[in-house]
Image (cartoon, rainbow, N blue to C red):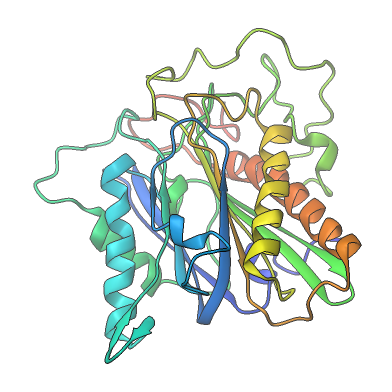
Length: 331
């Protein structure tokens, strides 16, 4: 397996990604969409998630496809980014048809970035406008690091960020990941610049710092982050995608498998203080899996992409005025 030409989730045929952020706010939003509605599913493993319209993604629910998926900063305020994206989609005539009405289906997940030093004294919730802007910016190329939903993200000891990666699995199948990495845990070995995800690095895509020289410590590694132990004050939120034509049940299985990528890249992961969540998306542009072995390969590739995307998001974070934590790129 090798990365696609962009090493981004948009290497998966049919998908587009848009970012919007406010440097003064130290927060932002990222939207994944497509020209046609697409199959989606979700799996949550963190103890403090914040979501919109995720129940309808279960395999037994009526709505078969969605119009966009939103990742946003802003905690509960950030869920309004989904409304902004839905406004724009509705104006374009997109949405689930109910009689003469179309209702855009826009599931969303948020992370907590309200204690990161940005100006949060707004008179009007800014996330609806950020959702509109992010959708309007959707394209094949987009920024990583301090961008979109990763604009205000932090880890235990470093700035977090927006990351993405892809893999060409074979037989025309591509898998990609998109993540806003804001965990309570550490993505690097304490006292070093080495990423926990280093065994899965391809080339020097996240800096080539080398392999960890020791196993993860038993003690927790999250004490440098402001408000780390406040419930809901963290979260790694992600989307994994493929062009293989998956059912909702198969997409959910891909989301479950992809959580392994979080555990490979973040120590500790899936804590009571994180809202770790993975959406899965299938564009349906390719053939369905030929059997369980193909579905296994897709899920495995999704987990590898997600681990790499987390490290890439942190690697590409850039310094800004008022930062409370250093960047990996400029410690």
